[in-house]
Image 1 (cartoon, rainbow, N blue to C red):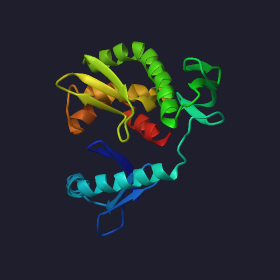
Image 2 (image 1 turned 45 degrees about the vertical axis):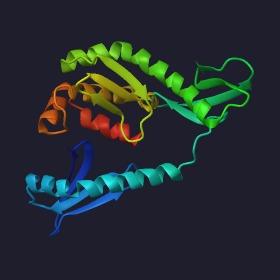
Image 3 (image 1 turned 135 degrees about the vertical axis):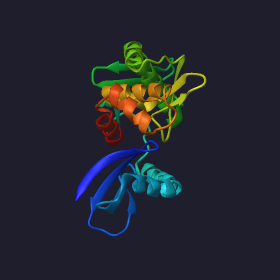
Image 4 (image 1 turned 90 degrees about the horizontal axis):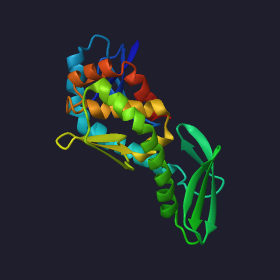
Length: 232
């Protein structure tokens, strides 16, 4: 039996070759991992043909699994005692209701939020997102020029928002890149991977062989960083 990770249309596929007669796909928790089993000597072209035929089902099933995982997790209320990640490190959250203007700041290994007396869960999440935006902008000040030099492409605009299924997106015509605010929760090397990934789309629109070859050149360990990003 042999195992390898490969990418197909932006989805990481765990491919296992073993003594079986047919090709099978399973979507497993956590993170809706795509597990594909094929007979030992199945040509790679046949694997891609199989994935193409099953692509609609894969996307649908992954969405169902990810949604089920999200619902199963207790939703954060962003109140004192909860833990929030910042650059891969857990930070204790301290919230204080006040009539003063809302405030969010880092205090050693804690995140302090002064919130309004009638703040809601959505209000507090948006307040934390403000801190995430500041942290991302601060790191990207140096990271973007470094990555643009590596990739040889320049984005005209960078935006931030919460995304449910993507870490980033690239509008090729407008040369505009949008990053998921929750990247501030991940390790810094994960942010670097996503920035290089999205800039590479200014060379190549799809996640095809050329795109993967470019990523191999720009960020040789990108596959490892991608797995880390989706595992953390």
